[in-house]
Length: 484
Image (cartoon, rainbow, N blue to C red; front, side, top):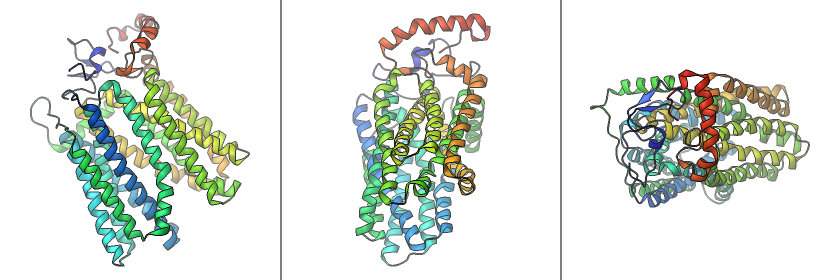
C-alpha cells in the first residue's frame, strides 16, 4: 500500500496473517478492510466530492418523491390499509434483495451496480410519471414503482457502503462517514419543506420527474470516478450460492461483526421504532397544529446534522466502541426523557438530542465494519446490515404501535428506554462485548481510534493501552500475541 492510503497494516505484523481484533482464531490473508484492494488514487478528494455530490443530489430527489407519494396516497385515499401496503412495498423488496445485493457487490464492480440501481429507479419513476400525467392513477402501478425503487435500494445500499473504502483513505473513513450522515440529515431537514411546496403547486406526475433528473445526475457524477473491480483471491470465484453461503458463515463466525449487527438490530427495534410514535404523542398531548409536527422533524434533523458533522471532524479522537455504547445509552435516556416531557419545548429538546445520538451510534459502527472486514466481503456484510435495517423498523412498529393503542405513548417510550438499558447490559455481559470494550483502549485498534488515530492521541493513550494489554496478557494466556 502506498503512503497516500494508510491502512490497518500497522495493526498487524507484516510477516503474519491479520488477526481479528475480537476473535484471534479468525485470520485473513491480508489486513482487514484492505484485502484485494488497490491503493486509493492520489485524486481521492476529487472522487469523494463527486461521489458525495452525486449521491446527495440523487438522495434529495428520492426524498422529495417519497414524501410526495406518501402524501398523495394519504390525501387521495385516506385509508390506513393503503398506507400499510405502501410501507410493505417500500420495505420488503429491499430486505429480500439485500440478501443477493451484498453478494453482487462483492462479485461485480460496485460503481456499476450503484449506477444500474439509480438508472432502474429513474426508469420506473419515469414510467409512473408518464402514466399519471395521462390520467392513469391505479394504486397497483404506484405499488409496483415503489417495489422497484425498494428493490434497487437493496442493490444500491450495500454497494455504496462497500464502495466508500475503495475511494476513501482508511484514516479518513470516520470523517467521510460522519460527513455523509450529516448531509443525509440536511436532506431530511430540507426535503419535507420543499416537497410540501411542490405538492401545493404541481401535479404529482410532474413532481416524479424531479427524481428522474436527480437520479441521472447521480449516475453521471459516479461515472467520472474510477472504481476498480475487486479480483477474487485464490483463482476463480466460487459459484454464486457458494459465495452467499460463505458470506453467511463469515458473519456467523466473526464474533465482532455478529455482535455489532445484533446490537444494531436491537437498538433499531427499541429506539428507532418508538421514535415513529413521537408525532402521535405530540398530537395527543401537545396539540395537532402542523407547526408542532414540523418542529418535531426539524429538531431531530438539526441534531442529526450537527452531530454528523461533529463526529466527522472530532470523532477520530474518540474510541469508536465507546461512541457506539454512548450512543446506545443516549437512546435509552432520551427515550425516557421524551416519555416524561411535561412541555413541548422539553419534548423538542429531547428529540434534538435523540438526533444527536444517531450519528454517534451508526457512524462508528459502519466505520468499524469498513476497517475490520476485508473489502471482498464487505458487500455481503453490508447486505446483511441492510436486511437488519429493513426488518427491524417494521418489526418494532408491529410491537410498539399496538401497545400505543393500549397504553399512552409516554408509557411506551419509557418502556423502550428501559429495555434499551437491559439490552445494552446484556450486550456488554457476553464475552465479545467485554473483549471489544477492552480492545477499544488500544489507540491503534479499529475498535479504538483506528487508522485515524493522531500521533498525539497515540502518544497520550499508548502507555495506558500497553499497560492494560500487559495486564490482560498476564491474566489470560489466550491473549498472548494477539494483534490489535
